[in-house]
Image (cartoon, rainbow, N blue to C red; front, side, top):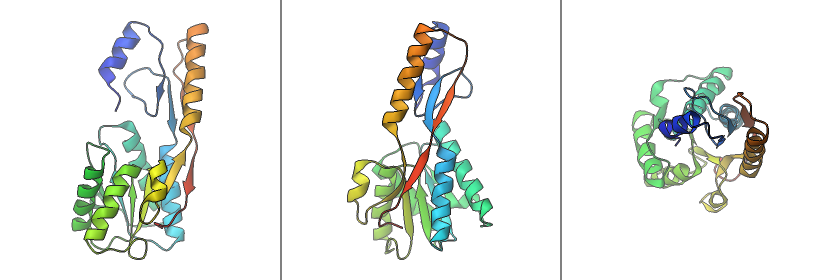
Length: 206
């Protein structure tokens, strides 16, 4: 989560910086981030191709811009396929951890018992969600498909292995470092937002 107050201090002191992984609308920043909107659209496209029509979203922290983008990707994705979408199909938390994924999954299912797929805004939350689904008696992916976001190494070892959205964090860091070097050696007043593409990694949970 980005501390907007701290970023404002950096700007005031004219200290160059680049954010990797997020950004703040209200403050002039240079940022490198994943294409969160398109990533969620890719997840929706894949689920629809697999015959899923009732898709929920367990989003990551409601305080981040990345979560706003993931929700936008969800809205765009379901609209393009002509699917019904209501606010009850989305739940979110303040945290990115196992516990939040676990509890938010129960909350989502309580309002939407007929879901046949859930997209999670973060792989770790998806791991908590898999536990919740098992406790509710759902089979993954037979009864309900699951997709995460980030492609952490642990996603390969969940039961079943987690289908997820991948983006290149090494590339993000490289781009951020190059932009920071440019800002130090050739100062300018431009605010760059550079977007790194995402890709779908298909495993056993869909």
